[in-house]
Image (cartoon, rainbow, N blue to C red; front, top):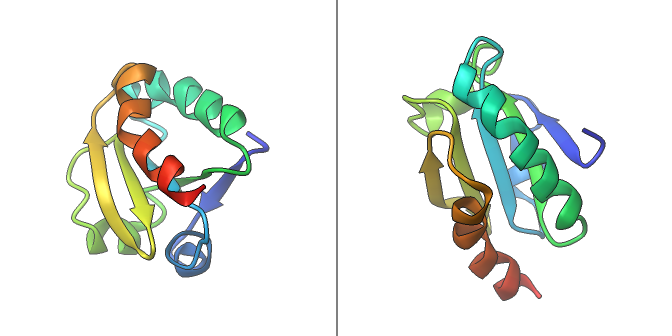
Length: 111
């Protein structure tokens, strides 16, 4: 998980909202089965897009403030942030190609 940053209520502003790169935020919880299913996909995306995309995982059980602020009602929710705002989101465990189809335009705009 070395390409993935642990997001918290305290560092979300700096790591996500102030990021120069587009950010994929994985809102998850340890007890969530679909979250565990999507975790390896998120890790692959982080590794393959290092330097072009920042990936942050936010445990919603421990960081209720951020989850509440963005209206996260279902997990996993994979939010795509750019220029300090959530521009897109995918809810649920989805295949890698589906997630990348959502992320790719934001990576291309940044380069």
